[in-house]
Length: 257
Image (tube, rainbow, N blue to C red):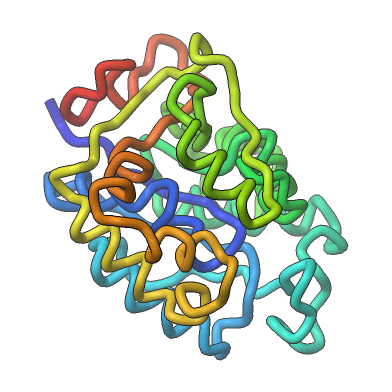
């Protein structure tokens, strides 16, 4: 069975490594084409260079940055609108263009909570959801290239039963983790064989790893066994986009689908 190609669409540099770095590394190692679209930060910013380092570690190619400003860091893209303030049709169309040019089998993004409730994460979910559907409709976004319909959209999420340690870690820093009912999880991917690569990619985002209380800095302060328990599995919700099509393996988290 062929290994599905994967295009990830996340809000900020480091999101891809934290919630999908293991999947990206795993599928790249299996010979799949993988790539990442990042909604915020300018391509000439320091965090863009860090993103490039992280993607090299994960085998996910060069950064594909939309270049909008981070909601909470206007200097992230001087002279550019905040991602949430840009016209929706514009942002969806730009992601559609990446989907149509890359032609992935599977698209990854944030769930509707954005895990932490960060407005950029939530908005990226909405944009990716629309783009994944509209990419297959030739009458929409004709300037974005020939239509292409991915098989499925997988959304990074945290099941309630497996989120205790991460919830406590974030609560200690005054943050909240939004969880989903366990029954909604469609894929639980064991990424421990690729954990060294995933963690190296997280640490490549040096600005975040050195900024307390960012999640990378909080994770860096844990014993390695505790860190492995928190980031050694990646969970996803699933939206089918092609009738009868498959994507990742099911809740047991087996090999590439």
